[in-house]
Image (cartoon, rainbow over all chains, first blue to last red; front, side):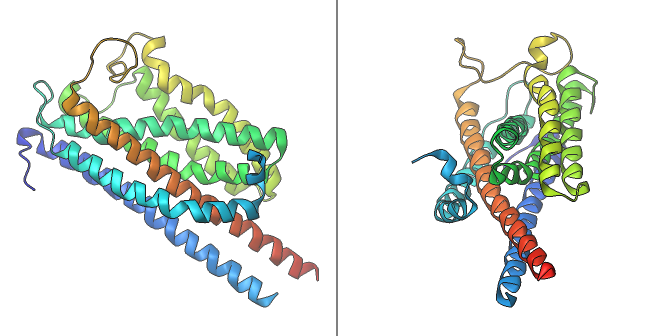
Length: 48
Length: 241
């Protein structure tokens, strides 16, 4: 979907790009840490 | 039924496991919808296309302050009632708050450059937000630096109380010191229209989306913290046996 950003294309795309990267990074890190913690607990419970 | 039942980790895991898919689905719908609506809004007569930055900047700044307030409440519950889940929830919320504060700072700087002619100004609101970000980093570092989890929860709880001054300053700095570049609140329950409905409604949806995203991540991260705590307890039991 094309939106005309005119002379402000660089700041708008920069703000949206950096925000998207930070938020997606946070989501990925949250899911990865959750999966690691779940595996670690399952491993210890299996041993016990 | 009492709210304190959820301080029981087993009860919290069961309830959060049931609620999580619904909250995540609501976030997955509302946030992209709000951002898309915001992206498609027309140019502002003064700010041009940079008005689109508002749909990230305002919800992120709102969450940055409110997450610290949530951490304050959770820390007070820990300090007064010693419920472990509340301390772990405060710890789980900190990285989310730090990212929200960083998003608000970065988008603010990128927005400020074309509008104010500068990336940064030692303005009361900007400065208090930067200090709030440093408090988030310090809070996370303190959790990682103290080995005993109860001592870490005590110390970070006190740090959270101190940092709350800056969280409140971030919100009210513009009102306390009527100076600096940053404008006052755009959305207010006070009479008088400050923002066109063209921007206001997509902004409300973005704010709801950011809140639901926070809730989803908070539940996920608190569950992770509880699992880590349980793993550490079982490992300690193995060592003792």
